[in-house]
Amino acid sequence: MTAENREGPLNGIRVTDFTWVWAGPFCTLQLAHMGAEVIRIETTKRIDVLRMLPPWAEGQPGPNRAGYFNQYNQGKRSIQLDLTQPEGAELAKRIVAMSDIAVENFAAGVLERLGLGYEALRQVKPDIIMISLSGYGQTGPESTYVSYGPAQVPLAGLSTLTGYTDMDRPGHVGMSYGDPNAGLHGAFAVLAALWHRERTGRGQYIDMSQWESTMAVIGDAILGQSMNGEQPPLVGNRDPLMAPHGVFRCGPATGDLPPGVLPEDRWVSIACGSDDEWRRLCEAMGRPEVADDARFRTMAGRKANEDDLEGIVEEWTSQHDPFEVSEKLQQARVAAFPPLANFQLGEDPNLNAGGFFVEKEHPEVGIRKHAGIPWRMSETPCQVWRAAPTLGQDNDYVFGELLGRSAEEIGALKQRQVIF
Image (cartoon, rainbow, N blue to C red; front, top):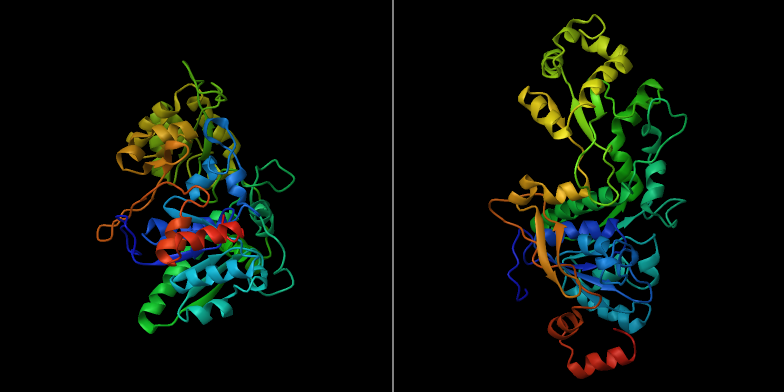
C-alpha cells in the first residue's frame, strides 16, 4: 500500500478523510492508529479550526504548529484540494475510488451540495463504507444546524448532571465532551461496517448523530426520569453508593513549580466502596475510633452525614502530600490517587515505561511528546508511524503516485488552484 512500515489490524485499508475540527479527526485518528492509511482532504479556503488553535510550538502561531491539531492527526496524510471546483470534486472521487472508507462531519447536506454525498461516492466505489458524524443526524428539523462540542454538553443533558450540591444552576463538564465521544462511537461503527463488508461484500452508509451518541452515556439519568419522574440531583464528586467518595485538599507543595501551578492546588481522590474499606481508611488516618462513630458505621449513615464525614477526611489529607496519602491508602487497599496536572502526566513513569507517549519528527516543529495509542494488541500490534502532516504535505504522493498524475499535470492543477 505504501512505502512505510505500517502495522495494525487495518493495514491495507485506506480512508478518505473529509473531516475537520475534533469529532471527525478523532474518529479517523483511531483508524490511523490501527494501521489504516488516512488521507485528509484540506483547503486553505476553509482551514481546519484545529490548525488555528493554541497551544503553538514556541508560542508562534502557524497552521503546522498547533499542538491541538498535531495531537489528533498523528499518522495521517494531508493534501490540499478545492472541493468547490468541479475538477477538485472529481479528484476527490478518484481518491474515494481507491479507498475503503469515507468519513465526514459537516452539517447535513454539505457534501451532497459538492456532489460528494454517499450516492455519488458509491457510483465510483460500490462497496464504500461512508460515515457522517454530523451534530444532529441527516434527517429531522435540526439536521442542518451547525454543531460544536460545547453546545453538545447542555443539549445532551450532561450540564444538568454537572455541579456541586450547593449550586442552583447546571454546570459545564469542562470540555467539549461530545466531540471525542462521537469520534470513538464513529470508529466503532466503521469497524462493525468493515466486518459486515468482509462477510457480505457490501458497503453501507452510517448516519451518526453526535447529539445522540452523547446522550448514550447518561442512560441512567434518562431512565431515572422515564421510570421514576426524577431529575438526578447535583452531587459534585459524590457517588450514590460510596462514601467517602470525592477529591480532598492536601498540604501545599514546596520547592519549584511550573508556571501557573499554585502550591496550594493539590488534591487527592478517594473512593471508599464498603464498610471494610471505611475501617481501613480510618486506620490509615490514625483515627480508628471514627469507624465506630454511630454516624459513620454503615454506608447509609455515612451518606446521611456526608458533610461531616468529608470534613474529617480532609482534616487528615490537608496535612499531607497527595502522593503520600495515595501510597498509604493503596497499601490499606483503599482506592486513592492524586488528580494529575498535564506536566505530571508527561513525567509519569508508568505511562512512559508502557510506551504510551510517542515522539516523532515533525517537519516544522521537530520532535514533540504526544499521547499515543491507549491499547496493546498481541497479534496485530499498532503504532503511530509518523507525526501529524503539514498542510498539503502529501500532495505529490497522492496526486502523483496514487492517481498517476505527472509533474506537469500537478503543476497545471496548482496553477488553476485546484490543488495548492
